[in-house]
Image (cartoon, rainbow, N blue to C red; front, side, top):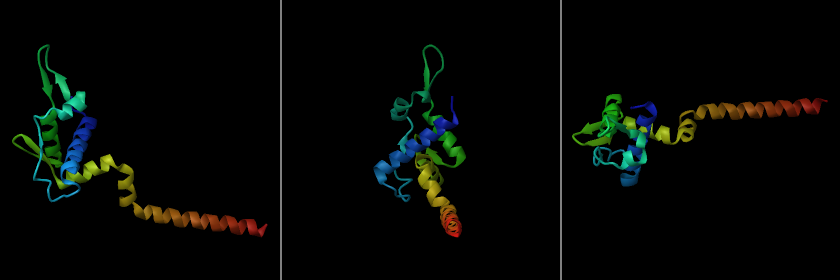
Length: 130
């Protein structure tokens, strides 16, 4: 069964494969994709394999690729799946959530620092008055 957690794991897997081969280059997203018939993802994540009946199993890798394509995170071309820039950014957020928060919401940190300084000065001033 395809779950949101499994979709995110596959997206992070594609991202890590891209980083391993091309580094952090966005210009090479379309150059080399991941073969959908490759069993590497299924071997690492057994929840990507579903029993159909007593004799058959189904690997969900192709369906995960199509799901990512529908969401705009990847493109599926014949038997390969390629990350899109949107998928690359989303996978980076999933893999490094704290880094993403720090970069995206840096203005909050500035406000928090000023607030802490103001509170510290107020406490110092109050202790001097007594």
